[in-house]
Length: 114
Length: 114
Image (cartoon, rainbow over all chains, first blue to last red; front, side):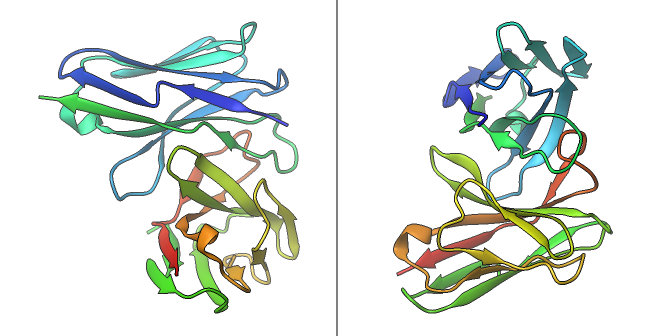
């Protein structure tokens, strides 16, 4: 089955710096890669996703890149702000038919210091 | 307001005392899942359901049961809880196959088994 590895487990940056979180996946058939943000004491919420027919997707200060050949994808946050501090989870799944299990990475705790 | 609700939010119990965590969604979603979140392990799927009366095991189903008698409800049952089931539990629902759709998470249930 699919295995998703996520690095680093913790990341500390200064406000205004960029942050990059990387994930690798094992199943070459995976084609949907969402990122979820979980603030302290809150539920995970989708912040951005990418499908395998796209190499990069941006939404304001966040972007996700996908390299299908290398089977890795990354989350990029520019101009970080204290409110970006949270745990970020990457995930992977495949196809759209039936129920395709979403496999999560182990999470990255991002701390943005003022 | 579209939402996923869980009850209780916090529960402390003792080994062997049966308990049920309820989950309900008002978005008419077909797909529902249960996850447990443990430090360093991310979100791991316990059980999922594709529709009424259709359920299947996820990655860590041992010690858990579920039922899906109505589309909106997906309770998680621990027949004989043990301390290794102490965790943070999330219910989630999706409007379509996970390969294409955002998962909406409930607020979480923090369970402690003594």
